[in-house]
Length: 232
Image 1 (cartoon, rainbow, N blue to C red):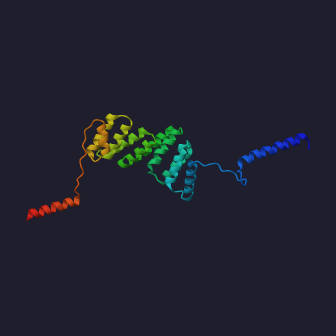
Image 2: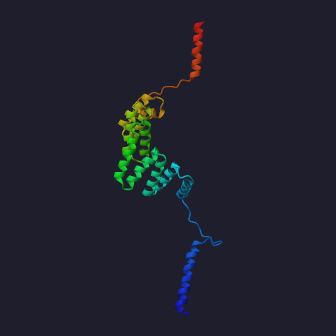
Image 3: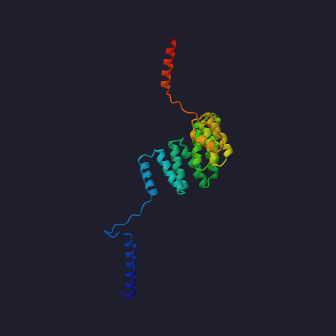
């Protein structure tokens, strides 16, 4: 064996020791596992759930949320579409799908998809409100407000819808609009301490009526006794 061959062989051995020695633990030569992040563990758990029950829409939605957070738009889109194939009225998945399409660069498809979902709930105040909340959660404020106004058209005397629109405007710093809708909500339902508090901060004097301390059953008994006494 020549000197050059011996040197090359020695270099090979050293490299081998460095490669495999760095990957092995001290005892038993076991390979160390790369530490998994909480996201990795959650993804594995969701994939296992999906493998056991593929038709579970919530598992697909949650997996889509993980992909969306990591900027994996196509994977998230697939998960949300799968969610909607099993639960067509999953409002959070609808809004999230619109969001990932926009973030992934498919602007036109995102807009047309949003229009389809909004039109699906045009005759439902509850559906419009829920979709609006989902859009707002995704930061799609224009669509959220469109849904809220659509819900209000179907149920103009809904304290809940007026309240939500009021809080929407409050979050945007539009106190004039917020005051209008919150005042309307309070007018429709005065048992809203939080709304009363916000109106108070904006200089609107409100009074929360006290709840009757007498239960309906007790009140009926009092009335009946009074009527009997009058009859005597």
